[in-house]
Length: 134
Image (cartoon, rainbow, N blue to C red):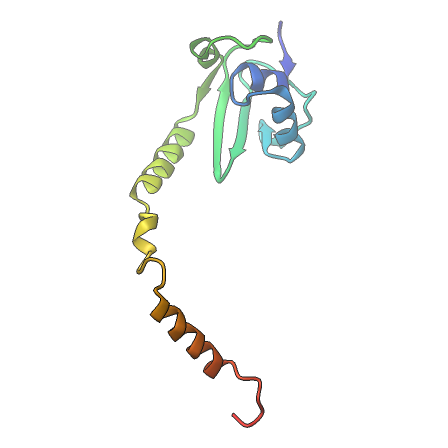
């Protein structure tokens, strides 16, 4: 086997859980082979560069081997080599997620008390009057 469909290779290399998910991302323009947007039937061969966008991160790999069956993860990892730049960008993104703010820190107060709700209701009425005399 000297070439295989890109959607089948992405599935066999375990980048996507199903071939239809790989095909959907290819149709959305999230997968490029050698810098060009492709169709699912485009053949890839060893030495090709495949770039995939997942979320806000682009992952770039070089095809090392071909397989048309989905095997175990260690076997799938033998099908590609991730580029140094892609590894660096993934590490930076992971560090940003780790150093991100704690969502609970944005909460200043808990649920408003009855007194707080009354204060909000009174503030609303005085601020957003529809009368012309104010």
